[in-house]
Length: 450
Image (cartoon, rainbow, N blue to C red; front, side):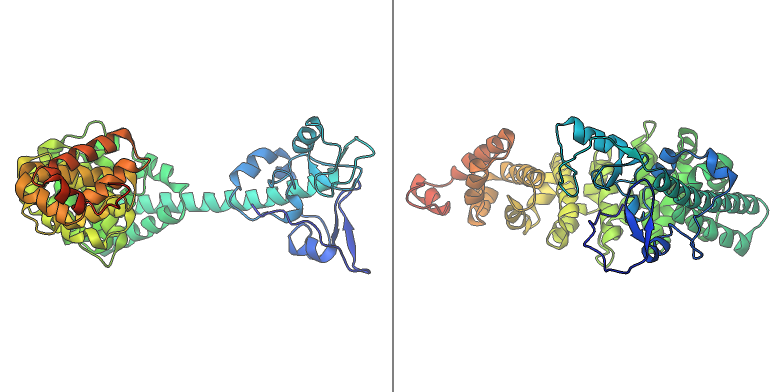
């Protein structure tokens, strides 16, 4: 909705348009430009149907469109549904101005003039203008929506008849309709969702499958459709299409698997681990596509929440690849990557893989107190796992990388008591190989703090 802009005065001689009841006075040029009047100077007429429309409903459904500023209440900055005019000539929505007066104010909110008359006058002409404008926009929106729904149904019907390239073309157009018009999602689910899933069969070409997945990932799938998609054969096909498709197809496949993994009926063994995981790591390493990296990390995090799959993630070399990526990631992706590494550090083979990465300690130490409290939490857990595994080797390496000073910063910060406790434990572990004097020097503290 547009912000209310108070009037800055008008030139003498301008043609004015009175919207009635002593309300706001507009110049004719502005009224025509804003669509309040048509080009001939008459009011917009929407016919008999408009009389049946509810203004409140229309305002809610048309919330995202730009509304003429003269329809906006200066108090709420929302379209007026019951405009009334004060003795000062300023118009407001009835509920807002009554609330203003009930709070003990005796002035006009816009002009701050004292109200010499506390009566309010319904601005019927402005109300009719608002009603007419919203009615017209609402009917146009409804007509466009009906046309789009009809086209979606037509395309769904075509999919039952056509094959080959014609089927791919129909799927492409249906995907464009779904992406551009959210109102078609329910129609497609109710009238063709199962048919779309049926396209994901043993003999489905990857061209057809990628288009069907591009549609399914944009739908609000009900439980029956999700259950159908959770069949191992369909999951395998989605993974195959992800591994061989374009970047956009890979992203759509990863999103769809993510959606299915959030279902209550999902079982971790359904996911064919190695082929999916290899494909995900390939997606995460695609630095040219930030969206691909984010989507891949989100799915990998969800997969790692299932303990039974974590060892497979470690076995394909995910840990060194993720460590190598850390310095290139934005904050959102960095938090996801650290969360994955923390989950993998709960496994013995995960801790060993972390220890064997030569850069893991200096990289992770730098991330402490750098991004968010969550990142600091994940980083501390990773460092604790590595240093606990080989205290003499790794703890010394961590101290040389500046860990002790960072831990003291965490302890003195406003972070949670849990983080402070973990930092104190890690600091104690790191100090075991040093004399007090040497360790204090490693902390790089001022004499006062010492």
